Image 1 (cartoon, rainbow, N blue to C red):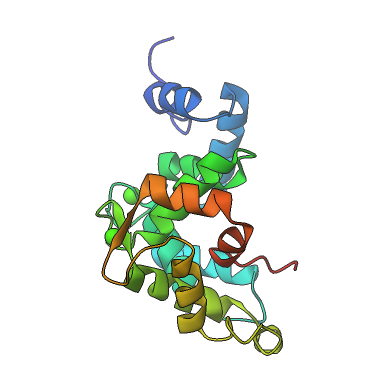
Image 2 (cartoon, rainbow, N blue to C red):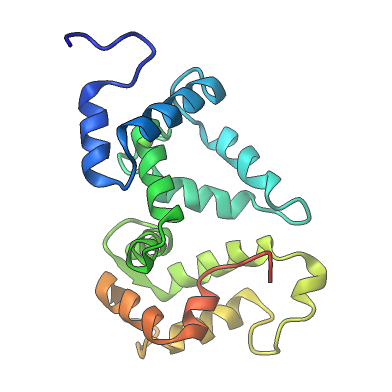
Length: 192
Ligand SMILES: [Ca+2]
Ligand SMILES: [Ca+2]
C-alpha cells in the first residue's frame, strides 16, 4: 500500500501494462528487475539498442535495421526507450498472435509515422533488411529478389498499388496475411 518501493516499477505503469499486454504482475516485476540491471539509467539509447541488436547478426550489418526497429518502439518519439516501451515492444514481437506482429510490422515500415506506407518507405526498409542478410546468402537469392530495389518492387506488387499510391494499415495487414510471399519479404529470418 502507499508509495512504491524505490527501484520497483510504479503501480500506474504496472496496471497499464497488465491491461495492454499478456504479462502478469509477477512477470512484469521480473522484467523490470532485469531491465534495471541491464539499464540502470532506466532508458535505452539508440546506440545501446544497436549494440544489443548487432549481437544477433554477427555476420552482417544490423545497424540500419536496428535504427528502424528502435524508431518503431519509441512511440513517444523522445529518442530513448523506457520500460513501458520496452515491454510493449516485447509483447508485440514475441506474441503468438499474427495480428499483433503485423501491426508492429506496419509501424516498422511507416518510417515517417504518418499512418501510411509509401513505396519509398518499403524500399528504405528493404535496404535495411538487405544489410541483415550475410553476403553468401545474398548470392543465393532468386534473381527477382537479389537487390533491395527488386525486393521492394516484388513486395509492393502484392498490394496492387501504383508506385505513387500509399497503403493504410488494414490494407498492409490484409495483403501480408493473404500472401505468404509478402509475409516472407517483409522480414528476414536468419534461421532460414
Ligand atoms: Ca521513448
Ligand atoms: Ca509513412
